[in-house]
Every structure is written in C-alpha cells, then in structure tokens.
Length: 372
Image 1 (tube, rainbow, N blue to C red):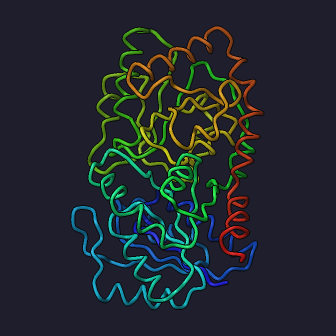
Image 2 (cartoon, helix red, strand yellow; image 1 turned 90 degrees about the vertical axis):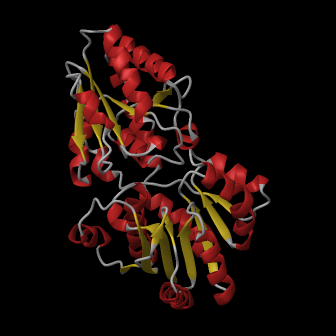
Image 3 (cartoon, rainbow, N blue to C red; image 1 turned 60 degrees about the vertical axis):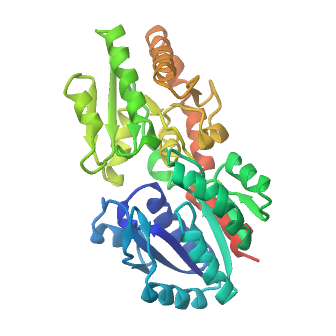
C-alpha cells in the first residue's frame, strides 16, 4: 500500500513527533512492506541538520514544502496546493498530524477532490494555552474532523472528546519509541538523587516555569540537600533554565542532547520529572521507563493512561508550584529513608517501556488504519 504521511512541522525540528515519523515509517516499511513518503511544512526551529535527518529517515522519501508563514500559521500557495493534490492522488491512504489552524481544512479539501482515505493523527494537545487555538478547535475542527475516514488518538481523554463530538472510527493507538536502545541500560545507584526533565524550554506546555520555581523553593527549604536537577532540551533564545542554573549548583542545563546520547543521560538519572500542563502522550516517559527509571508526573492526558502510582512512578497532586514542590519533597524523603524502594521499581518500569515499542505502534496502525 502507498502511504503518504503529512505534517505541518519540519522534520528537522527534531522533537518527539518528528522522531516518531522517522521511526514509525521505517517500521511500517520494513515489517509490513508499505511504500511510504513523508511531506512536511516548514514550521519549527531546526534542531537537526539535513544530513542527520537523512540518516534517521534511512530510505524513506521526504519532501519539505516552504509555506509562507503568518503568525505561526502556514498559508498554502497555489503551487503548494497542487503539489499536495498530486501527492494525494498517488497515495492509497494519507495520514496527517492535526492541531494546526487551517491545516485540517486544507486536508479536507484535498480529500474531497481526490476521494482518498485520510487518517487523522491527534498527536498535538487538543486544547492548550492558546485561546485562539481552543476557539478554532471548538468552532471549526470539531466539524471538519467528521469528514475524515479514521482517527488515531494517543490517549483515552482525546478519544472520548472526539467521541463526544460525534466523530466516528476512532482508534486508541498509543505512540512508541525504539525501546531496545534503552532497555539494556544498567540501573545504577548514586550518591545524590538525580532528577531529569526533557523537553522544549520555550513553551508553557512543558511547565518548566512551575518546575523551576518549585525547585527554587525546595532548595530554600533544604539548603544542603542531595538532589540534582538536570534539564535537557532547547528553545531558541528563550532559556529560563540557564537563569536558575546560574543561581543554584544543583540545577544543570545540558542543552540540546542528540538522541543517540540520551541513553547516557538516563543512565545517571534516578527520577524523571514531567511538569507539563498538557501532554498528549509523552515519548520521553517511555524512554525513562525503558531505562528503568520511575516517573513523577502531572496528571495530564498521556501519563494518566500509562502511569501506575507506586508501580512505575507517582503523580503530582496538582499542576502548580506547590503541587510540584510537594511531589519532589515526597520522593526526596522516600529516597533519604530507603533508596532501595526507588531501585525496586526498575522491573515495573522496564515492563511498561516494552509495551510502547514503536513496532507495536506500527502493527496497530497497519491492522486498524491501513490494512483494510
């Protein structure tokens, strides 16, 4: 089957969804024999070089469309529209990433003109901090989405929201990663309690502003603590992590870390901290679990489906500075009292990671979305 994957975001942005595109398309090709092409827009800050992108795509064809961008929205030109129209006609099924204003309308027009099967991937938060985005979702997307043939929801909350809108053919298919590179990492004990957070620094979605303030309060309350807080990520010119790192020795900004180097980062970590305000899935959680590391997370969409309190991690009581501070304190006191209680969660964590292998995601997509 000829599959076309489309995303408004440039694959060189190098974030979770872009990593997922590289991994899942290779699984679909190698294990199920699909012919695949990826077309993207040009949104996003580029973290990957073109050479590195090609190494991750392997032999998957890829093409970038250079849209005019107005207020973070892609404006289709006639040339881009007819290019997409041609690609739609060549494909048997199209999968596109939803969550960007106007792009669902563009995909709907192309579907109507070509009568091709189109699957919607709900990888971005359905609702978030942008009032304009939320208004568009409630007033436009909820109706446009009914035009498409199938929907891939990464979490139960999004699946229920789509169902409540009267949308049909919804498939709950969690995302996944190449867990093999993390499962073999040896779990180590450390003289300090090492927390790790990974994500974009320049968006309120990840909640780093709340986390940093909570850490500052933790350091004030425990001035001689044995906790270390490492951050890995990037965000262009906006980097609040560095400001806090200059004031506290136990806050460390690792900056952008290449994916091949992430196993090493996980190997000297004890707890993964997720402070997100919205998190539709959380590939980084799967990486942490596969590395044998428990997760301390906010009660957001993806974590609520995967995290089992006391088994593979814990939830913060609320998404706030005080809620995050209380959670960090609880785990720190647990570690001080008996470090083995955290190490004992390793097997449960790795078992959780195995569930979310990218090959399992590809199998479910093949069976439910493409193999019809």
